[in-house]
Length: 343
Image (cartoon, rainbow, N blue to C red; front, side, top):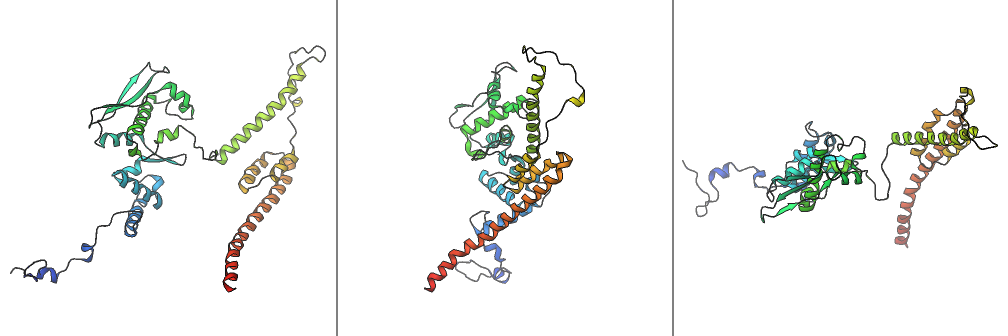
């Protein structure tokens, strides 16, 4: 027995459809992941939570829903796979950057150009040895040449001077990556959306707009010890030279080796170190300076620790006073408005 339409003229619904209606979700519009739509944003968050809980994503995305959400947005804009974007987006010096192989693959598969090719010049090892990327635009047949990247540029920019630089161990591969990045930035910047490559970010130091450089406490301690050693060495050098000169003629004589006890190190200035602790204006700087107390002479360590604890208590009290004063400043305008409304 065939289903009997409820509307004979239009035939839009059958008796079977009336008896077994489709679920409500089937009639809802399709939801697209988006930042600026409530349902779309909820969908994006659900997808991001799934990726954040997966062990297959890179470490920086695990248990980080916000970073996964941004990666999903980048994948949508690039029309690329989400996991592929996560696996090729790196954080170097606090800045995001694409892997060079990902950008090369994006250019080769975008459909506008032939596959990237590379042209070499010069003698290996010479300053003029280098590489440039080129390809042909499919719509016009025009050859598009990139910028030459040679050893002269590498040395001038200081790319090979950084510790662990790949320019010293795999220079040919680095030439290919840098030439491809320059070509992509010149002819198809929309593919990288303004982001540099991870290899480029690793070759430079991240400097903030105000001129500051991000450092760690370990690097500060190492640098301070190096500077202290240079100061001691510089202070001891004039005294050593003066002891070798003849006061009458000024002639330098060969100095015989002296007993070890005759070589005296400069006396430790406890007062100067205490003034340095008193001059600290933040808890982080004070704690960093206090780490050096253990290297001071034993007879002054107790005194310097007292200065450290007293200064730390002062800075802590100042910070607490500022936090208590902030709500009072915010409450003052509201009290004035209430008085005005009452009047």
